Amino acid sequence: MRHSFLYLTIALAAFFCATAAPGAKPNFIVINIDDLGYADIGPYGSDNRTPHLDRMAAEGRLLTSHYAAPVCSPSRASLMTGCYPKRALPIPHVLFPAGAVGLHPDEITIAEVLKQAGYATACIGKWHLGDQPEFLPTRQGFDYYFGIPYSNDMGPAADGSKSNPGKPLPDPNEAAAKAAAAKQQTDETGLKGFAQTPIPLLENETVVGRVRVEEQFAVTRLYTERAVRFIREHHDQPFFVYLPHTAVHFPLYPSEPFMGKSPNGLIGDWAQEVDWSIGQVLDTVRELKLDENTFVLFTSDNGGALNHGSNNHPLRGSKGSTFEGGIRTCTIAWWPGKIPAGTRTDAMTSMMDVLPTLAHLAGAKLPDDRKLDGVNQWPVLTGTADGQPPRDQFFYFRGFKLEAVRSGPWKLHLALAGGAPGQKKTPPRPQLFHLIDDIGETKNLADEHPEVVERLQAMARAIDGDLGLDGIGPGCRPLGRVAAPLPAIDHDGTVRPEMAGAVKRFP
Image 1 (spheres, rainbow, N blue to C red):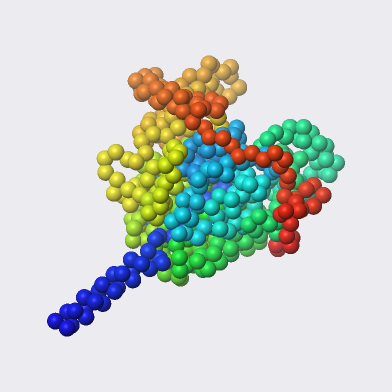
Image 2: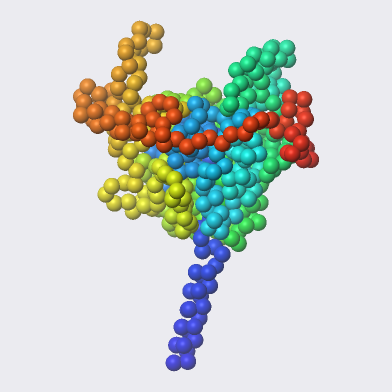
């Protein structure tokens, strides 16, 4: 009896220690690549060498029907808020430097939801939801931020932001003339083109560097080092690391060890460096023995830009479009022991589903004072979804406009002009595709299935009273606004006083 009592005591102690351990809540790492094409990595058919992503896929699950948005800012707003982009960030395209608008400070982000549940939170990389201090990650639930607040092409041509490495810089006189013209086109979303100011590298809300050519080459390594450091410093408590890489957005700046190593040019070289970064992060998780308690999601903010060398095969279209190639992204979910290894699913998932899924896993409370469009996708990730999938429809917005609707395997483009290039265009007409049989959207079945066309058109009409078919619908929430936006670094190199820090070079 004495031995039985001792064994019972030990068992109860082990149980309570395990349930009360700091690692009881899962850790989360979301890695978001910029402009990565559907077939730019090995697991999705690339001939480029990406061994760490290959291993991640072999140990995890491919989400082959994962939807983002056609361009950067809307996609990131969807991820952060669990909503269709237009609901949380109603803008026509993307945000630019020194913009008066951004993600509203009252929006509740994934970081705020997890922080309330006891998580340490970090955003390391490209933010792109507003560059004014009121809009930065540190005001949206992140304990730590390091990165560039927008795209790496949104700076002066002389700093290398408008051309790939090795290409000649624009003539200074020509650039000045273009800058003067661009200033006339500036609106509340910020400075455009050649009117843009030097790109800042921020740590929290302080400018610590100016992004010139050297920093463009170094940025993937810098992000990776800080992500690994944050994981090591917070491994004994639940953490959420959001790692939105600048790569592989134009201009393409793979660092020297990866330059010229890919069969796919500069974009392939940079994809290899991204793969190296994934290896560093996952190896750290394994080394700290956190792999069985860490969910990692790898994805891209939109489809690849074909004009810069990306490959979206077998999808049709490019970044910026609502064809599948512009909005469906290569995505991998990894959690050894929880997510089945070496599997894939064609079930619809999306950026807006990440917040409710992570909240479910963390036991965190979702906001109940606003509408969320995302759903908990954990049954899909584990392969246990039975019957009706969590998401059976998707609305394809491009800016303010609804361009397509999907229900099950059917996708309806609402108004695409017909006719071959160079020929007289026919009036816009619906185009219907069966994505399971025709993932490349090559055969219009609208005439053969008018009942499906009508059903999907009715879905589109139904959302008009919420988000609107074009323009701002009643369900769109307000943008954040500041009265007098300023760049972090002015044209003459002067740092905004309240953001001034020890600016240094990052070779």
